[in-house]
Length: 223
Image (cartoon, rainbow, N blue to C red):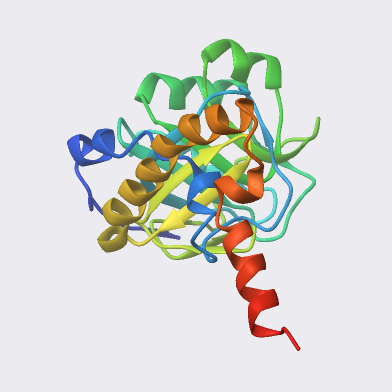
């Protein structure tokens, strides 16, 4: 087993200042760090941002998941690497309650969850791959806390900044997170104006860069 301390990168105040950024907006201009596996969310319409606290579980042994519930809190996102297992549900009702009490911002499980009604009742935001009625056990065999992990095709390091909602999640290096999120927030601020222009009759291609790009293409390729 490996248990490392949390990596505190951005402060909770810094996270709050960029919390309006949406993963899908970041997806307009950034190509890496996004999940490439389908996910479900426990609470549609909710969003989270926080520092990654990672936990890698071996097969059906969830011993260290019980331990990590005492290590997370406000400003943290728990990222659970299931090491390829999709059958045994590591996250259930009691673990979810402990995480809810901790104040964790959100949880991502690269595998199965269970007791979804309880998870929703607690208001815990969880992204998960599937639901399963068979659960992990306590064997005390192996596991890692706060080591580099892989989650839904994304490499996640402890302290990375994770943003998630029902569209998926994106992982950002701490040194880039603030500038990336501010750019996303700026883009989001322009969207109401674009919608208004389209509602008033302007063509979408004229509102966006598409019209200019099309014109440029034909001018370059004119015979």
